[in-house]
Length: 121
Figure (cartoon, one colour):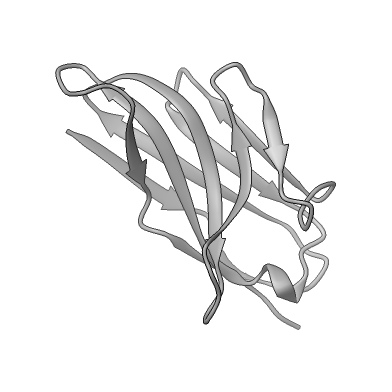
């Protein structure tokens, strides 16, 4: 079985920075794509950034140039470095991983529990 745990959220002033982490553990054989999503109150859950196992990245226009997605395949961990934060970045951030387990089916989606990011002066 697999656990996906997020950390790193919190309260930060506009212009500040936060680094989110998402760590998977358990009977993992391989992790393919890793994604960050966010959902603000009353809004749809939106894709923020993606990174492939080969380290190819893509970003939503709203965060491009400010956020950096990265991963450490040896640690089964996903990161989101968020700089120059704006109030509109306030949301619950969720990670999603495509994981193949040792004995289970391949390429299943696993979600983190969400971590709150609040940008306010």
